[in-house]
Image 1 (tube, rainbow, N blue to C red):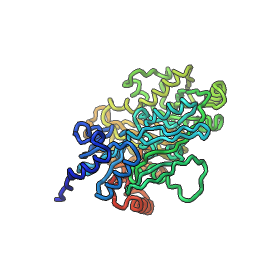
Image 2 (cartoon, rainbow, N blue to C red):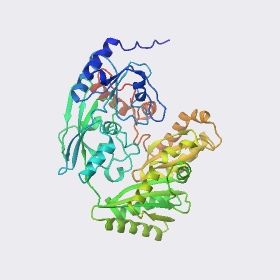
Image 3 (cartoon, helix red, strand yellow):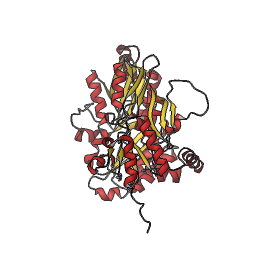
Image 4 (cartoon, rainbow, N blue to C red):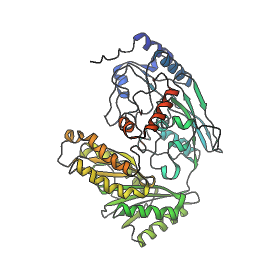
Length: 476
């Protein structure tokens, strides 16, 4: 029998605590508890200590001591991740490094269209700061009221704005990172063009805290649209949605800022279980699209563009019905309908979730093929498909059969993952589009990625973290 590693020595805990002060070194079980589980309850860990540093120097000293003593460190931001990357293991030997006190907006540069923020800034706070300067920070997630910028960057977050603005990596111009050794990599530059060697910042964005601790970043801002129009559309099939996407891109171009696909089942779940939602269309349709067009010129221009797109789509019989929001409030209500979709699945019982991407042109084929794979694993299981069709990212979730047993269905978790992900790979897609790898998909990544890719990632990991203390057991 393998012996469990010994717990952290009290004297070592005291040394770490002295760096941040007792107030910000959490040792009490009740204070530590919120840091030990993620929001879906799939991952639970243990720790003797949560450290909440207040500046970069304290982070540096923590990491220097961690490397010196071989103490594993798990960086954590808002704890909203969905793959277990921010949760420690069960040994109690890993300490949690919370970045929540590094929460300053250091600079907002309107002329450069950039903002420099610390890792603990809440995404919604950044959005509001940009809005106050008549600018837009376009990263938008359901968890934006609690997720933090450090976690957004570490997971390369996506969301509804990727179609027009890109994901977190594309929104990041520079980073400040504390390395496992305690050294500080200061690359907080605002340059849109920089062709001087390796782009080191991109190694840390999406690395899920396995290479270093992101403490600050320079992010892109954009002019606020002068007009925004949102429509809810009913269609017969994913093929029709793909045709609508092509039409919208042709007619609206870069003004098409969101294109969300919603299946009939998640639509019905939302009407049945979500509070305060209103039926967007009078008739029911097999599929729906939430489409947004934004104009930098005027509200009238945005309205004309969306009317042109929908008129052409109706004339070509691509769509069956459509409504354009009559006010900003109704547009927000349409978006709220989309945001509450994931939670509306919970009352329907156990579910198995997939965050995948395939080439946009193959989305309809993937949906059809994956449904057959699901039925082979669990006859009667209900496909709950929705997501960011404009960038090929679908949340392909599976709810248990109506009269099924939760535990029995969850016992099929790995079999269902294998079946769905095999279809994804058949379409040359990705098993993780925006949530990351963490603990949830680590083994599958290692088993299925090209061996050379895994080897190169391991070499990078060893170069940056030779002591192996940075978020061990995650990604690779």
